[in-house]
Every structure is written in structure tokens, then in C-alpha cells.
Length: 185
Image (cartoon, rainbow, N blue to C red):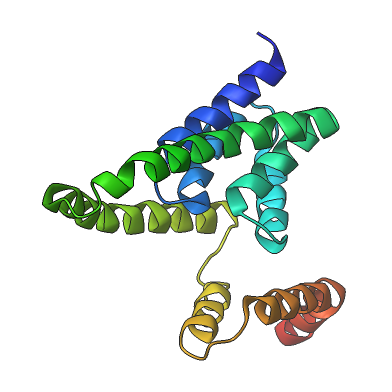
């Protein structure tokens, strides 16, 4: 099968049937691209995911663009992005055309109230998968916890968290081994 058609189909299917946005899509994309088809390695996927989260824009679109580019360059990124975007566009268009007729319907309101907790779970579940893939352990668990608390409780901008994490990662890579060796002595 044509890889462009196959990647478009994968991203279209994931985009059409995943409620909850980019984070809910991550394990599905990982399963299709890394596990099933082995188009990219697990390490490359984690790197692309980190870049996608850091780049401006929608996570699902960013990850599809980066994966498509990694696989087949500019064409691959365009095909993957289109596959990700098109289902949302079609669904939003359909909702805009028909939802206004049903927005005050009691049953529609109940359906959306039922969907909300499921969406929270769909967003939370990939967090554990990403933590496992990122090799978060008892020594590094404090980093995402403190980051989340700084954003949630103190209103820190995620941009500052990303900058601090980047500087911290650079510093640890440059001087961390020397520091830990001195501690062991």
C-alpha cells in the first residue's frame, strides 16, 4: 500500500475517533506508528512528542507534522497533517450546520454531560504512558509534579516551565555526572 495513503488513513482514523484532543491521541498514534508499523523508533517518537509539545499550535497536528516529516519529508508532513485536521473540520462543520437545532435538547445535554468524565480519562491515561516512556522514576517524579503544581496552583506560564526544564536538562548533562560522582565519594 502507498505509504502516503496509509499514513493519511491512520491519522484520519485517529482524528475521527478520538475524543479529548491531542493527549488522547498520543497512545493511539504511538501504537500505530511505533508498535504496529515500526515506522519510527520509540526514542524518536518521544523526541518528536517533546518537540510537538514545545512548539506552538495543536499537539495532535504538531505530532502528525513531525512524524510525517520524519517518515517522508515535506509531503509526508502535509499528508499526515491533513489526515489529522480533516476529521475535526468535517465534524465541526456538521455540528455548526445541525447542532443549533438540537442544542437545547435535554437528551443532547445529557449526552454531553456523560461524555465529559470520559474525556478527562482519555486525557489522563496518556500521561501515565508518557511517564513510562520518558522513564520517569522515583528520583525524577518530582519534576512533572512540581511543574504541574507551578502551572496549576501558582499560575506559572508553561513557557517558563519549558525554559527552566531545558536549562536544567542542559546543566545536568554538562555538570550533573560530576556532581553525582562527588556525592558518591
